[in-house]
Image (cartoon, rainbow, N blue to C red):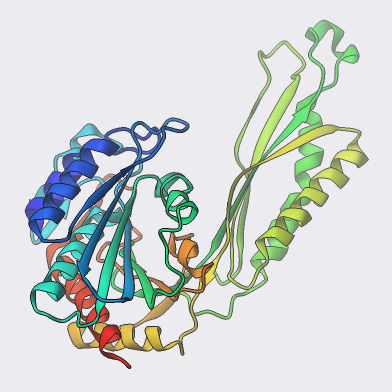
Length: 387
């Protein structure tokens, strides 16, 4: 397992821009073939900056009842190229993607292979989906699976080995991102009175969104959250802003972003309408011209704690860890949404830690890889054993 993770880390699958995806898919397929997981590499038409996007599918067992194991092999950009040379230190493996989520992929593959080798799958089968663009919204990889009808709504459950730190994420927030462009008219500073300053208009357009963000932070979720985590919906105004051409020119266009992580109780489409109305009303009052572009819209996803699949998963975690399972709302959005929208109970459960993911010292504990692999194998076996 450690050797495979080290090989996967060496695949520089930074996204953006989306390089090295075909090479990593080949490494995964080779190892899945060795584990008896019947891999298939699906080629997708290039889109945006993604080079040679791929989805890797695999199967363990041959029964009719179905469980999905889902993961992604793209990673966020590295802070240093040395992060692509994994290091084994004091029981951990350090490197880009070890926590998010190439370590989780390793646990899923070995958990599925172990369950098959031990004859635990009965009349069921595990289908593995590994996609290439989760870090930029997963519309290419997971969207491809949905469009091609490769996600069966009759599945008993779905799991993804994201960096939950062995906490069960039975719910995840939705993501909504917008870019607001405020338009003016550029002229030389000496003729500023003849121009329209898009920056000054932008200040008036953005200001009411501060109150919107405050109000959303006070709308608390009913799902359990981790210690120190926010119970409200989080919205950031101006995470990125830019505009103008030079210091001595009235800026013709100024833009800013609005980005939120919305609780499962929220209707993300209704919130998009509310944000749009706030921006358009402020623009009308300021006499400003604006345009909006939605750059991300990912609905939240949730599975109730009393769902039979959640209870089975909790029992499996307790058996492996020897401790009571913890269920929490993930502070970000997950690929669980692609399955939950079809009525499939979906969970995040992985060996990595959220707090080290994307950072310069990202790591995963080797013992956690083993425990999570055991939980995955047991979970599928226990589900298939139920009437």
